[in-house]
Image (cartoon, rainbow, N blue to C red; front, side):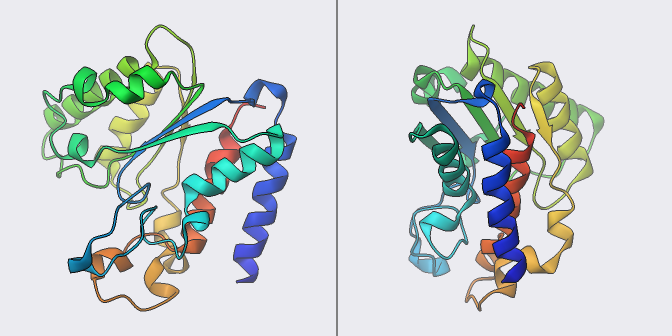
Length: 223
């Protein structure tokens, strides 16, 4: 718990140090269950926020938003979208139609946190297709604007997926955030903080893991 407190304090300090360049009115979070997951009784999950944070305020989305609010003096408008369906079927995904709300939102800051649900990439062609699809996703959402784009690697590190994410990030001049080390620390998993009936939920980042993800994202914001 001491480490978690330290991370939260550091998070606040980092966002305070950011310049006016990183003042964002609209923030778009695109992710999967780590970003947001509604109640699902059969896996014993009752929250409607990032699985498996103990409370809404403790998931990485709300920690980043809180830090931005404190720095800017006003809360940004936030849109959070679970795009796990894109992860599972990215080839041929109808981005313009299915993510129209995200496109129309016209965010100043786009944070992409996906990869964990992408099926295993068995060939170089699979990796290339994933990178192409993620690049198209980001290109479509940003449109002809120049928002700040953050793309983080997988919490459950996977070399092929992470390379595709990094490649797509580079293609849109985004900022890549490597969080691969977080998944190597058992203390960042929810199962280390409290017992869970479902192993899948327990395998998600807990409060400390969420705080560490938020810290990495905030630290990467333009200075």
